[in-house]
Length: 407
Image (cartoon, rainbow, N blue to C red; front, side):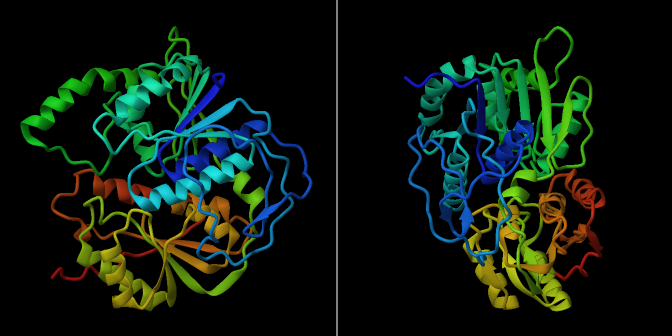
């Protein structure tokens, strides 16, 4: 039996896995360049152990948008000999699973053990996964998680005895997580709207003890015997006994790029339509207006955007739709990438300025007009999206496109 790792990380998305690698790199303080190693997609790679997990074989195809850009000399791998074990709890959608497979390959090449644990897709999958992970969760001295709002992760936290709990970014949700724990509120995603009728309320009541345990874990105080760290690129401020470490994407910058720049503008897609926040017709018109105004040629799709929506965008705008097989921070750093990248309020307006520092790329953010919001959008949506834009560093602000009339 594989011995338990002293540090255990749980990730459910490609971005979370990327940020675990960034966290491990930041803690390792690597000292100097290492030798050139075998290459994948034109990028020098360090080979590490490939043990651990039943994760399907990674898709080795070249990332869309990868132009084979040059790579800076890479420091020695932070993971070599590390007791960190990364547990992937994959979602069911194919795009996320594909990106996770490639990120898992990168993590293994850094020297980390990666385990693929199915926890969804069948009625008993969560319980089977919990049973399989319980021993390692109890034994870990440090537990790293990417989504504090995940009910499955909160369930795992009831077993945690670790001295240290680390939260790495799962995008802009980190901003809401820090704010809610500071106020002592229950953890609820900013775009979530209550519902489900009586069955939903019953489920909430049954789950309340688990949620309460998670809140206690995330708000350390004297005598509880554990520390909480937030590793983030977001504009957050630690509170109470919580500590903050800034994620400046040092691992990404050391391993990839700098990118070759194109003359055009790239647009970055968002899942605001899929989460029920923004009206689909208004979103399409806003993308069309941005395309015309900035001469955009490519649209980097969010992994949650539906094929139907992307087909409609392509037909209405003529944009080339790119579905990256790695997080956008890596795709942009490897290049080729436009000299200007335009995004709606989202995680990338905070992360790309770090990842692309010194490359000459301008990141611009377009405000979301309140008129674009759907009737089912949460009351918090408007102020949250405005906060994402207002707090972005080193970006160019663009006014919201004139709100079209929804058909």
